[in-house]
Image 1 (cartoon, rainbow, N blue to C red):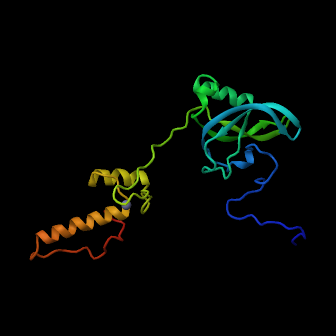
Image 2: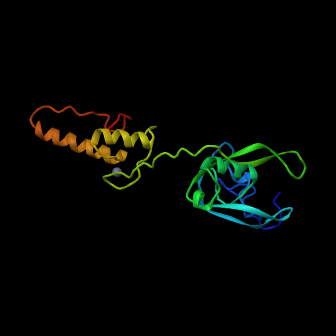
Image 3: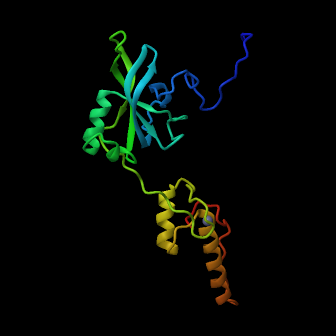
Length: 207
Ligand SMILES: [Zn+2]
């Protein structure tokens, strides 16, 4: 039964805990099994309001507002484990070193809860630098993003079209170039019989 209070129904990737008071990133903000990559935009220190009162804490802020695995990126309170990881990753924990660097987060399910000594979930920084895949360039012909096509990844499409057309193309533009090439070929061989592929471009065949 619905309560009488005015509630808003959560849908899609909205989640429990997303409207909680805390201004800081918590384990519940990170989708289980994901390891989001974030870019450090600032290092901060000060009195932070926690459930158990105010404490002096180090805080990281991030350039991203939303990344795969985190619906709303919030600042991260840095505990001693994560501070050590940051030092190991980048040599020291100076602002001049860390701002602009990327870190990858994951959820550790075996963090000791300081309140009751039990196990709880905690955000951890992966002990290696995130392997960032180079961004896929835009399509040379239409300027649009090169997207996955018939099970091929954008990276595959980039490599395939660059190899065959000399420039990175989206599937539609590669198709267009293939058609154009076919037509000019047909014009050259006018009079001769031209065999057309009846299945057109929909067969999943590469362009
Ligand atoms: Zn295109």
